[in-house]
Image (cartoon, rainbow, N blue to C red; front, top):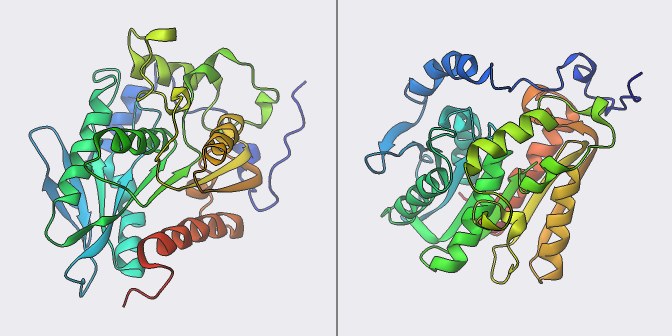
Length: 306
């Protein structure tokens, strides 16, 4: 018999959703189904080439300031699926409400392109964004969801090492931060939705390739980084029914212990990606609003950008 599946009362679809949608047999099909949306030009935005391998979907605010703040968005998908078009709605909102230039990066996916390729693609996009004449490089935030949250966290670490770009905030929604979760048993697997232990093992195995144990780079797995010194402040949001709940809380605590300001938003009874699947619910709207408010504070000092 399954455990009780206690979900947030707003999330009425939760009981009917699968525990995972990503497996070794479904990856190819999911990629085919989402390829069309990724190839279409973005509405109210433009497709820009960063280099031979990387593009971004770029959204500019109306009446932009000479030097506007900026956001780099990194999509989720367990390092295996997804595309930059997943960030279109968020980037349009950032441009419209915060007056910021917003770019969603099209990074290459595992297993064809394991670490460090996806991270290098994201870093190339970040440097390109910071170098733009209409962007204030002192006011750039990193935003990521799920595996994209893991990449955004890794980017924050990479920025402290390279000293080329200094983000003002890292905004991580239910980030995928620790490959060692694959060796642990989730206490209530019946509460997981959309991403479970099996899909997690596949994602990390594909991203890390032949690396394992002590050979895993801390830039591949942010939770393995010993030194948190100098990292950008963080906003981390996660639900209690998310496979990443424990690792996200542990990461937030380590940031705080290192003196890094970290806002943690825990949503009781929320599953992985709840704000995308049941986006019209009050709990999802509040989650997205809190994320946007954190960005507004970091990029505009909480002031109206107009």
